[in-house]
Length: 68
Image (cartoon, rainbow, N blue to C red; front, side, top):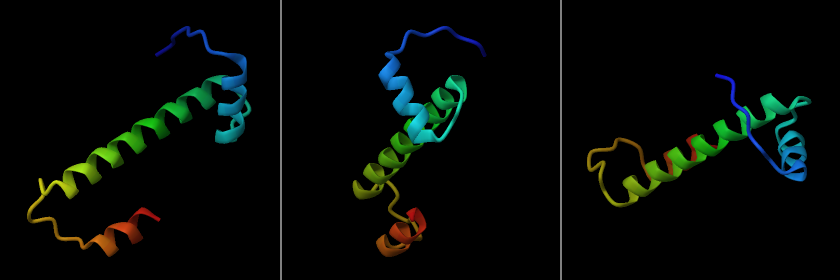
């Protein structure tokens, strides 16, 4: 989907640098994907710590090793 957004030039340049992308569009997409991935991982960790997965088969050490 194509959209038009206003984004501060410095922020966009930093996104391009951090993602390694040479073009603006792919840098924004990669940054959004990473933001969503981190949010989902954080949400999963919160639910895990709160015991929502009482029968989760992995130990904490296994989870940390998997995240690396």
